[in-house]
Amino acid sequence: MQHLVTGAGQIGTQLAADLVGGGHQVSVLRRSAVPLPGTTLIQGDAGDRGLLREAMAGAEAVFHCTHTRYSAKAWERDLPQRERAVMDVAAEYGVPVVFPESVYAFGMGAQRLAEDSPLDPVAPLGRVRAALLRNRAAHPAQTLSVVAADLLGPTAAPATSVFLAMVLTPVARGRRAWVLGDPDAPRSATYIPDLTRAMATAADRADEFAPDGDAVLLAPSLPPLTQREMARRASEALHGADGVRRSAPPVSRIPAAVFSAAGLFSPMARELSNQQYLWRSPAVMGEGRLVREFDLHPSSWDDVLAEWAAGVNGTSATPLPAQ
Image: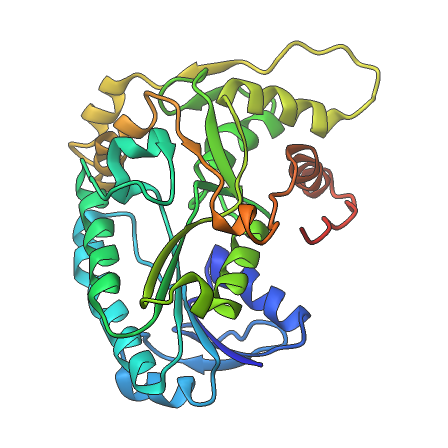
């Protein structure tokens, strides 16, 4: 089968590798001139309808994975017009569009998220995400949005993964982890290859998931852990059975006032301050149709942290099995 992936960040890169590994022909539309291994590079902007028509010819599905900087203004400026262009051309060709999605649009509903949770944003970033979801539902293209929690995985980077930046990287350096919100509130995380497998499954079964043209699905996500527990288990995975007795890694909460003050000078800090509601309480992803009906179960924390620790230690981990 032939597929188009727009964007090659932490999700698009993993997804393209998965599809190529599954024997599919994959085109990747991105601004960079650097191709991903095994794929056909189409260089340009995902908002260019002419380029999209060329790139989408013959494709069975489109995976729209482009993004922009972490700012509500940037999201409002960049994301709707690109999504509209992709959906318009997909509707012309009659192919489904699969989107990765965050929990932001659901506001406090993210405390215990289900596939039927209503859109109820409470912060600027969430209002942009909710508008995107409403636009997808109203568009004639067949659309499937796969909602993930905060991401971890082999293609994650500290700039795009909160848990990697604030928990795992400090643990690897032997430093205190300064975390967002309550360090003892349970939180779900999504392993990026679990998300991309879910997106590929959604595309393969688009008519089952979205018979009326639109569906919102929950990605299989890791069992909830507190950030304190995540730090402890990461330390254990990193040091293994070396026989050295260690205390649990220190974990502290970043004071809310720090974000408020930093937001006066940093747009990203301002957005993180607006998102504090997500971190004061538990944030647990429920099991959705992908798990219940298609047995697409998440990876385990032991395997995910072993893979991360192997990368830190420069050793080889056993590849995680497909779920």
